[in-house]
Amino acid sequence: VTEQRTSEDYLPLGDIMEGALDEIEAIGSRSGEMTGVPTGFTDLDSLTNGLHPGQMIVIAARPAMGKSTLALDFARAASIKHNLPSVIFSLEMGRNEIAMRLLSAEARVALHHMRSGTMTDEDWTRLARRMPEVSSAPLFIDDSPNLSMMEIRAKCRRLKQRNDIKL
Image 1 (cartoon, helix red, strand yellow):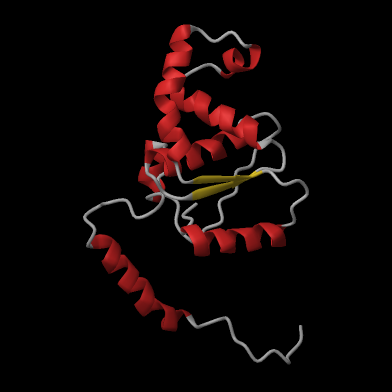
Image 2 (spheres, rainbow, N blue to C red):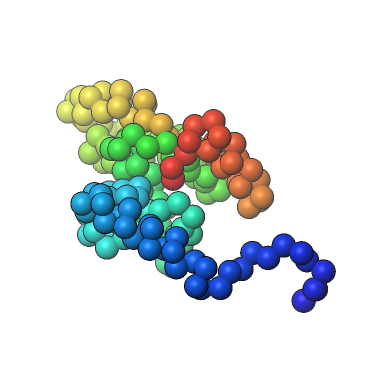
């Protein structure tokens, strides 16, 4: 480890305690109101009080276990249900696939009906009813292939500056 760095990013615990207590008091003054971005999952939100800035959330599981669907549900809850600007970076699914999945979940129309062209009149009605709210949600989708973490980070910073992204 080099000793030439002059910047010190670490602090002794004693120097951090006052700020931590201030944060605890601020949270207590909100009377139990959620402080983070809601996930759409009541039990998870009650345990975590929502997703908070600076947290790194890792969703891990074996293939085809629903990780992407869970992440989409988080973004859907934030953007569509709570009108909080959000972004999805997808290296696997295209933007149209993501839009179809979001619309399917919001309109409660089976995705396989959309894909197979077997939607009923009732399906079309539900889709039409939900379309305006889904379309106006502050949700950004980037399906650029082969993005590096540095590129995603740069895009997130830009989106935060321009649109105050919350998730």
